[in-house]
Image 1 (cartoon, rainbow, N blue to C red):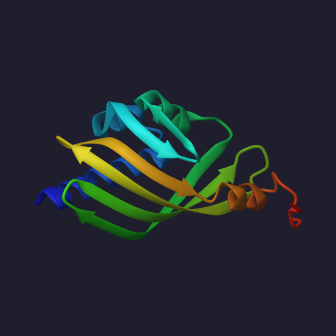
Image 2: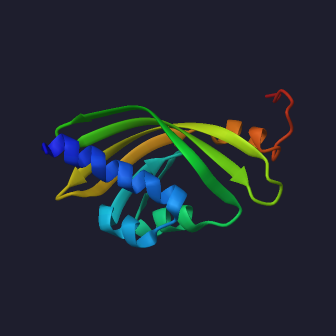
Image 3: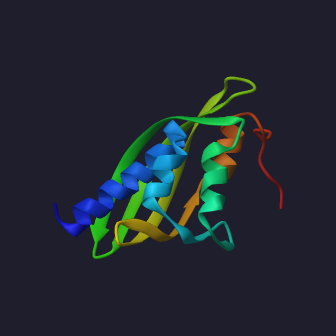
Length: 133
């Protein structure tokens, strides 16, 4: 297995933890001091990822990998995740694009954005009306 193939497998294992909620697996593939960029913020620490994976109220039901590209120590993923709002049973699909940097078989840094607005509208958590600015 090449380094790029191994890195893709690590990222797939990481993303799958959002479905399985397997924190042990998450800890195996994400560095404790991972640096995270997204949504206009920068944070450091696997605890942020653990919080996202184990947060109550939303369940990831399915993942569709649209595209995965690996080069050197980076993996870029475009992904569609199907969520269920546990309180209502409503489901919606959220698109996301993430880039990961790996070192020694673990994710040490990642950047990304996801369509949070579309997800919240799809789950009926925001009104389905045009926003006025």
